[in-house]
Image (tube, rainbow, N blue to C red; front, side, top):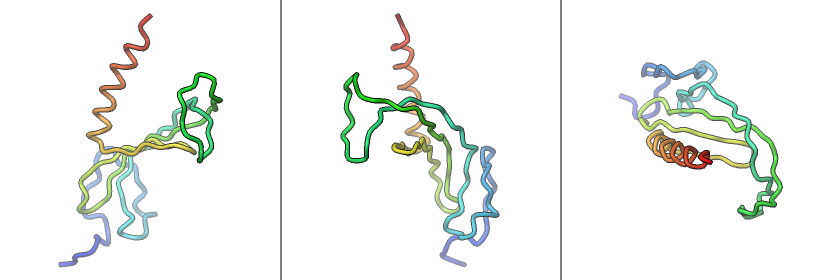
Amino acid sequence: MSSGPPTSPTERCPRWCRGEHDTQAHPADRYHESHQVLVPVVAPRRSTDETPTSSPDRPVEASDMAVVGHRSIGEATETWVTIAGERQFVEVTLESAIRLHGVLGKLLHELQRP
């Protein structure tokens, strides 16, 4: 019995997996990945050394954020959700993303009321 990572995927892909496992050469780098969705966003423009501010006068820029789910193949069972752009990202467990989704839904509903 080997104690290292599997040399080939030893588990079935989840329904959401769109990963190209043939291109994942090193066994430790193999993972299941959902399709990636690009979302156009407007975000504060800032340099890496700048502290975020809530000033209404701050400059903004348009960009895209990629949203994707992923999970390592093998012993890892945690599914992750990543939202990433050029300058910012959020990476949380699926359970955490579900909690964020619920809170964001309520907040957005409240903010849209006249």
